[in-house]
Length: 360
Picture 1 (tube, rainbow, N blue to C red):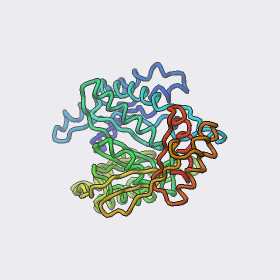
Picture 2 (picture 1 turned 135 degrees about the vertical axis):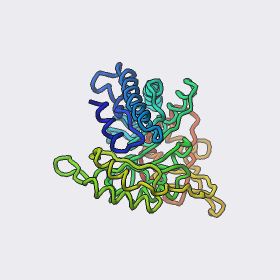
Picture 3 (picture 1 turned 180 degrees about the vertical axis):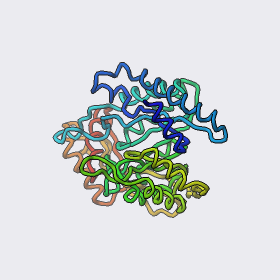
Picture 4 (picture 1 turned 90 degrees about the horizontal axis):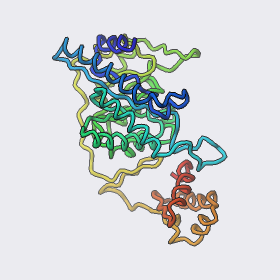
């Protein structure tokens, strides 16, 4: 069945297919008590996709086909507490995410994936763990495959679930030096267009977009037909937004076939000349270049520079300590210097501060 689905998309004109491993990390599989099968599932999925890609490449060697080994976002979030009464609580750690992503990456590479796609990113910290894991595993395996990253703008707010704008999200992960950076899922072409346009303006790498076939109806189905979606994608391509395009929820082989026809012969997006700058981000981007004014750094969240802050940290009065950070932001600080003597205090206070929108 999976091979038939892969082949249907290749026949429709796809150049890249994704492995069916979106939820195949040990973390996501734990809900089904199947975490012990994670490596096996990833390996089998990559091997199956590899066989399909090789068959189609043999048929049409002028159009080689590729396999993207998929790493999904997992069902946990490293930067947001699942408990509204305990902002510092986490149900997953960075190291646990790294371990899970490394295991999946190893199996995907050994199964024959041409590249690794970190997709549907809703929590940037999860994605950072994935990037770290992938690069660590590449080094261990002695390979250097391309990495693709694709985030999700969750709604009309224009932000990821963890609160970042498109540019802030890009700034957070540009260190990965990915082959492509893009957006997928949650929104249809109408809603996603402005964010793809913004990404095409700021990204130093190639840009991808995989919108849904519109927004889901009352029954959770997607109603945007293939020809209408293809016309919208063609407009994106003509505007110079895209290097790679595809589809997410609700997109069938018919949608991909229509898109393939719609963009045939159009030139891909040209990489822009991006000025050199220090590019930082919290929920919003902070780009510091030659034309920037002074940057204000708040230093009161420093145990060596503030007796009050040191006392609050020692007494574990983290809510009051957050007020110190909040006051600096309200006074114009663009960067907050959080400095602790004790490692665990740094972690706990950092976890508490990061979810607060007015402290980012």
